Amino acid sequence: MWKKNNIKKELLIHFLLFSLVIVTILWLIQFISFRSFYKDQRKNDLQSVANKIEKSKNSLSFYENLNNYALDKSVCIEIDNSDYNQLFNSTYFGKGCSTSKQETFQYKFDFINSKEKEKIYEQKNRIDQTDTMIYAMKLDNNQFIFISTSIEPTDSITSLILKQLIVITLLIVILSIILANLISNHISKPIKEVNEYAKKLAKKDFVSPINTTSNILEINELSTTLQYAQKELGKTEELRRDLMANVSHDLKTPLTMIKANAEICKDLHQDNKEKREKDMDTIISEVNRLTILVNDILTLSKMESLQEELNYEQIDLIGLIETIIKRYDILEETEKYNFECIFPKKKVIIEADKKKLEQVLYNLINNAINYTGEDNHITIKVSDKENILVEITDTGKGIKEEDIPYIWDKYYKNQKKHKRNLVGTGLGLSIVKNILEEHKYNYGVKSKVGKGTTFYFEIPKEKEK
Image 1: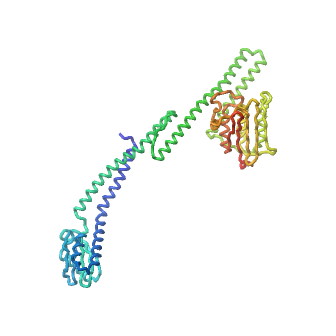
Image 2: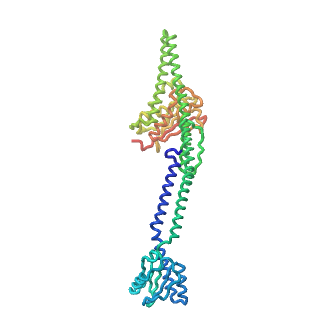
Image 3: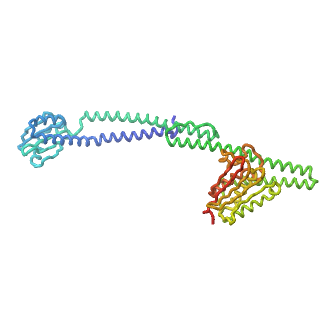
């Protein structure tokens, strides 16, 4: 049984309807236009015979030629004089050639007395009740030629055409069914394969290849799109698993430390104020880390769902960077981090969303802190030329060239070996990417393995006020 709106069914119906239209046109042409067409053709035959007679009227074999013309075109040829006496009558008498003497006299009398050079008459032949056409032509002053023929198709011609139409109708219907099946199979087979492939994607099968082969452009494009979707969904699924694993790790570690320090504080250090305060400081630090992680996840979620709009305002870029660096004074004192700042001498005023640009700078500096070399050296450079270029450089191990396209993905840098960041949550570069793309800033990474990495972004001058 065919399914409702099946391709084969739809194609078959449309092919049959198309065939019905073609057959209907053929039958209408046969029964409406064919007689008119036949009449025009016989009129052309009469004129052709008349032209030949005109050209050969001075020939010695004139009358013999007349019989040949009559036989060739299946017409009757008569020659009368002005006294209505018949001088010649062709030996061929086909259907429609013979009329009653009264009818013959009427059109001959009319033409001979009309003084016209040629004229066409139509009348009913009383002998066989067929319509007859007579082409009358004045040959000279005393000779008048009358060429007559039936203008109705003979029964044998009509019967033959009818049989041909029936055969043609059957052939068209049969061919329509065959073509509908062939074309529907040609189209439906790759569509079914694509459909099965899409069902596998819905069931999270991101491995099975699609084996659709078709020379139909749209189906090939659909297959290519699904293959691309499979690849991207596979990446998304892998990133989702990694994100869950890494977020779980980042949540588990501070929760463990909070619990451990709370228990120690309760059981062992409740009478030791100094150690108790140290335990509480650790708990507060870990709670702050959890708060930052949750905030980063919420921020990234809002950005990816386009829930937040940019709030542009004028910003002193150098002043903003200096304010952010002051937050790391404790790292300079305790961990001996060295922040080198290379800024223009003049103020650099830009227009951007201050809160979000602050997130970009903060996350890029955090990233540099986590991955810089043993010298703990970080360079922050601002260049004011054609565009405003901001560069943040560390002296760490660098990034392999094949890994660079993926570093903006959530937790990608920690996929091989997850470690606890000194600052930040591991979601910073994803947040940076989203904010810079919202601002339509160019951004990128330059890195050499063993020599360090530079993250940069460009602020177009047209964004300045």
